[in-house]
Picture 1 (cartoon, rainbow, N blue to C red):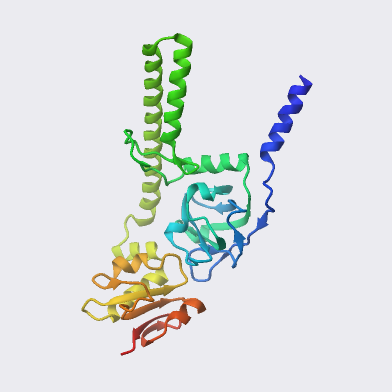
Picture 2: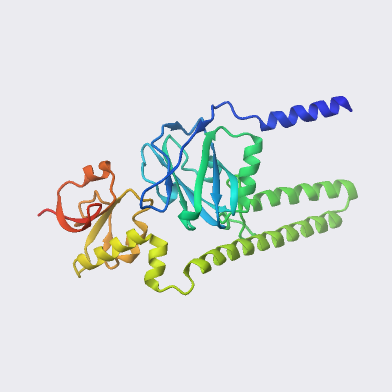
Length: 331
C-alpha cells in the first residue's frame, strides 16, 4: 500500500513538473486609446518555448483573441492568432500554441490580447511562457475543446458533424480511434461481430450527439454575447463597437475624403489586423499592400516609426489628427 502511494505521488509530481525551458514572465499593458493589451518587444525562441499562460480577470463572459508577431512577419494578424473563450472572474488560460496554430515558428517578437468584450472590464494580470508538460497540455486541450473555435470538419471524412479541436486535431479523429478500440475489445470479449458492431455504432452515435450539443452551446454563447453588444443599435453604432470608435471615425473620414471613383489604397497602422475593416467599409475602393506600386493613397492610423519609414513617395493629402491621416502618391 505504501509503495503504491509512493509511486502515485512520484508520477503526479513528474507529470506536473515544468519543462526544461526556463519560465519567462511577460508583462502586458493596455495600449492608450486602443481596445487591447500588448507585451513589450520580445525575443523568444518558438522551438524552445511552446506554452503561454495568461491570468485574466474579466467582469463579463465573452471571447478574446491572442495574437503574436514573429521576426519575419512582425504584424499582429489573424493567421497568427488563437480565438478563445473568457469566463467571468479571475482565471488562468493555457495555450499549447504549436498544436493550435502552425504559424508558431522562428523568433517571437511580441504578443497582443484583444478582448471582444468591453476592454474596461478586462485585464491581463499575469502572463508567462515556458515549455509545457502533460498537465498544461491537458488544460490547454480542455480549454480548446470548450472554446469558440474549431467547429469545422478537418480533412475529408464521412462524418459531417462539426467538432471542436483538441491539440490541433478534430475530436472526430479521437472518436474514430476509440470506436475501433472498443470494437476490438468487444469482439475479443464476446467473440461476435454483431455484438461488437452494435457497441461501436452506439458509442459513435452517442459521441456525435454530444458533439452536436457542444457545437450548439458554443453557437448560443456567441449569439448571446453579440446580441447583448449589438441589439437595438444603429448600423453606425454597430460599426463603432466592432471597429473601435476611433478607428471607425477615421474610416468615415477616409470614405468622405477619398475620390468618388474607385482607387487603390493601402493601410499602415499599429492596431491589430488593420486591413480587415477598410477592405469592406471602403468599397468600391480596392485595398492593396501599402508597398505595392498600385497604391495611390495610404491610410495611416497610429502608425509605428518602422511603418512610417516605408511610406516613401507620398505627400500629405488629408488629416483627421496627428495620428490619423491620408497620404497621396506623388506624381
